[in-house]
Amino acid sequence: MARNDGIHRTFVRNRNLKTANISKTEKHDERENESYSNPDIVPERTKYNVHFKNPTGSYEDMFKQMEQENTISTRGLKPDAVHYGELIFDVNSAYFHNHGGYEFAKKFYEDTYKAAVEIIGGEKYILSAVMHADERNRAMSEALGHDVYHYHLHVVYIPVVEKQVLWSKRCKDKELVGTVKETLMQVSSSKKWASKEVLDENGKPMRTSTGKKILKKSYSVLQDDFFEAMRKAGYTDVERGERGSTEEHLTVTQFKVVKEQERLSELEEKTKQQEYMLNKAKQKTQVQNKIGANFSEIDKMGSKALLGGKVQLTQSEAKNLKELAKVGVTAKAKISDLEQQLENAKKDADIWKNRYEKLKEQTKDFIKATLKAPKIVMEFIKNILSSDVDRNQPSTRDKNKDIER
Image 1 (cartoon, rainbow, N blue to C red):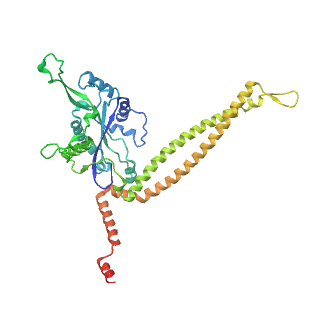
Image 2 (image 1 turned 135 degrees about the vertical axis):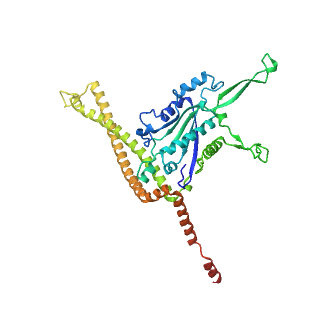
Image 3 (image 1 turned 120 degrees about the vertical axis):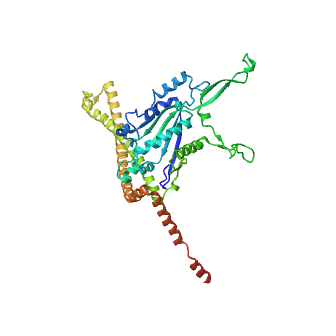
C-alpha cells in the first residue's frame, strides 16, 4: 500500500469469514494466542491496543445470542454460508509517525470506527473493534534507528441486509396478500457487498450505449466511503487508497530494498525449516546411537558351530539383526543428506545476509530522508531524472549544425 512517494493513503479491506474460521480470527484480533507466526508482534505492547467496542463473549456466542433475540436472521441460509465479515482499516505507518504516533492514531481510528458503524449499518452488528498498536514496522524502525509501530483497525461484524417478507397467496385475508408481513435483517455477505449502480448528477442510474446499467464494485464503493468519511472528519492530508501497488511506483533503490526485505523473510523461513530438519537429524542420530548401544547385543548373537567355525543364529536373532541393520543404514543416509542441506542453507544465509546488510548500509540515508521529508526527496529525484533526460538530448544549436553539414 505504501508507495513511499510522500502521499498518505487510506485503505480498507473486507474479509469474508465462515464459522469454521471465526475462532482463529478472534484469537488473533483479541490477542488470545500464546505465540504468533508474525515476528513483528511485540507482546509487551499488547496493553496499548485500543478497543472501540469490546466483545461481550466469544464471537460465535454473540452471533447465536443475536439470532435468538431476532436481531438477525439466518433463515434459508446454507450450512456453509458466510456469517461474519472483517474490515481492516489502514494508513501507511509514516502518516502516524509524522503526526506524533500513538495518540494521533487513537484519535484517527476513533473517527474511523464511526465511519465503520455507518458502513456496516449499525453498531449492534459489530462484534469487536480493536486498534492494534503492538506490531512493529521493521523497515522504518531499522531506517530511523528506533522502534516505529504500524497502527491499524480490525472491525469484526455480521453482514446484514434488510429483507421484507410478504404475505403469500395462502393468506386467508386476501387483502394482505402481497403486503409486508415482516421485515428481517437477513445475514447475507453477497447481498451486503453486491455491486452498486452508478448514478448521474440527477441521481438517476447511468447506462452504457447499449442500455445496460453501469455498476460499480462494492469494494470500490467501500474505499470511497472510507476516504470521504475521513476527509469529512478533518483528515485532509490523506488520499484515497488503491488496491495493490507495484514496483513501478517505487524508485529503483527503494524497489531493491523491498526485494531484499522479501528475500530476508524467505531466508528466515528457510532457516526455520533447516532448524526443523536439523532436529529431525538429531532424532535420527539418537536412533543410530541406540543401534550402537545394541552392538554388544549383536556381538553376542549366535554361537559357533562345532565344525567349520560357522556362526549360527536363532530365527529371532536373525530377524532382530536385519531390522537393526536396515534402521542403521537408513539413518546414516538421511543424516548425511540433512547435514549437506544444512550446510548449503548456512552458506545461502551468509550470502543473503551480506547482500542485505550492504544494501541497507548503502540506502539508509536515502530511506531516512524519504521518511522524514518524502515530498522534498521525491521532487529532488524528479529534478535529477529530468536533468539526465535533458543532457541526453541534443541542443537546438547542435541540431542546426547537423543540418548545415
